[in-house]
Image (tube, rainbow, N blue to C red; front, side, top):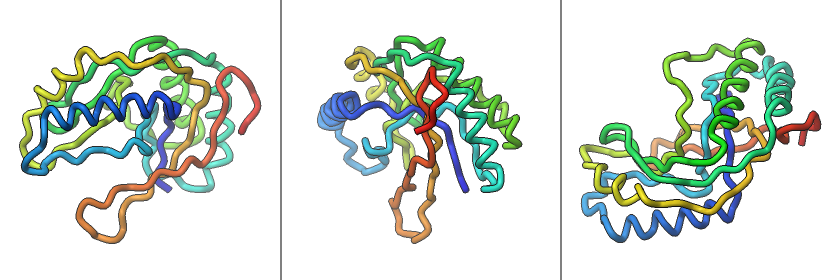
Length: 193
């Protein structure tokens, strides 16, 4: 199964960001339909992309991720600023306890490795939430500039989630993957949810 470990923001923070994105889209309309905006229900901060994981590894992976969650306290974040990866991806960033979030990401990667999951070491953790991807050339600079001053409300990161990504199988253009939380662990405690 295709998995990733993530932090999923609470509904109030998602709603606030969704309102900001709606204003952004109204201010800078995509007249040619080349931006594929992500749905708010799918918004998350990826801590570690695990890729295809054999189901036989899930018990050990769950134990390792529970330990990773236990090692890090609940902490505060807020959505802040925006940026782009070239002209391919538009994202919103975060501010707050980024050192704690980064530690949680590193522990998550280490735990997955110890459980036998092959991990790609190519990219260091950079907290961002993907808002849109491009289908064709789109200059994302104006969008990132519009997001530069955005500061959302504070919210608490209090759990680590293991999420399954089900890729589209229908072949219908524009169909998106579906995400489903497989397991979640509260931060700073040993109990699993």
